[in-house]
Image 1 (cartoon, rainbow, N blue to C red):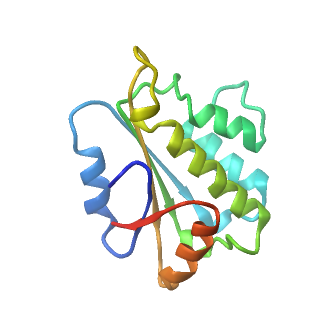
Image 2: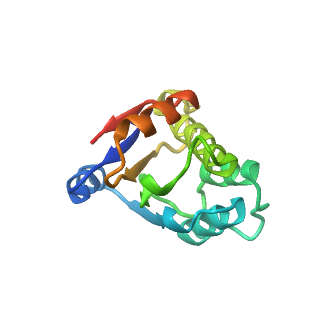
Length: 153
């Protein structure tokens, strides 16, 4: 799994999860269920719980980016966000869903090792979309319009 990409899993997600988390070092694994993502608040609440965001979290998209691109309160060598029921997200029809993915795109870029300043803690951040029966073409097109390259893991 390359870190510039958000990976889509169909079927056996355990192999992809093990591949990412199996390296030596500390791992942080967060799981959110997209089936409950109707509004911005529901998305932010799920991520707040999953990542144990700090008290200063500002409950908006910019604050989510700031927290997820930092994660100093959860020291790890790799961070993995698994989004269950991803095929229920309406990326093209919901501004909240498309903004969520735009934020994820920027967070993944922020953790790209080539962008780290010398001396800064290096860690990996990846997102796995647990995709159900919906055709992948729909998500590839929608995420492509947001500038996100999708890899099938």
